[in-house]
Image (spheres, rainbow, N blue to C red):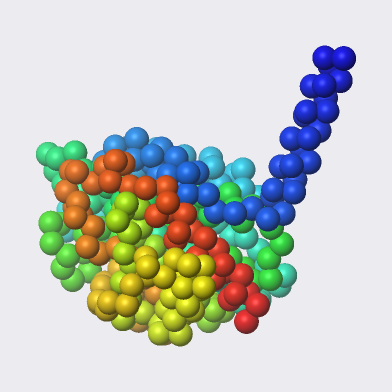
Length: 295
Ligand SMILES: [Zn+2]
């Protein structure tokens, strides 16, 4: 009797997890847990042991998400010499993979180098990593119309203290160039970059360097999902990982909470973040992916 009960419980779990995967929804709690795991590696500047260990963790997670994994390793020339960097791409193939249209959701996993400090970048580097890992979990095993790329950028941050010249956006510049050459850039319907989206007090401003129609689609979708209060109508211009793609003419935007009070401070820790903020951005972006695919 006891055995039969266990069997039926197990069957019930199987059935509910199967129906769950048919309509998997982005979970803020899960994204928060992924973010915490990334932050637990400590400061993660490019070339560091913690950065490499986080890469391994990302790869391990993605292997469970039924996607194609592309590792984009390169050597960056920085003001502190050559640094080995690696972007990680998860591809969820569409109907005509490699030929049809494509959508990209991107963010960085490195944290800014502050020698002698303990900067763990919970929102700045952590939240984008946790967000992408949760998005990969949600997209796993779902039928796709378009190719959906999730890209984890290394080397977003400047290696020197200030943000000068080419000392920034190493990973995104490398992918933009790679995608220009292999034709992926021309297939892009939209690229949405997320950065510092974990703040408990979430307010995303309209970044005006990015593509206007795509930004409008995101803001309209947020309003329709009753999340309009987090996507505010205040404008800013920001140089971030979307810009190498914008400069090459691709429809790219940046979702960033720029007035995060702990930006580049050692106090950028998990207690400043909320699962709800991650969930708001996740549900909006998930809906936008679907709408882009139907266009
Ligand atoms: Zn930063």
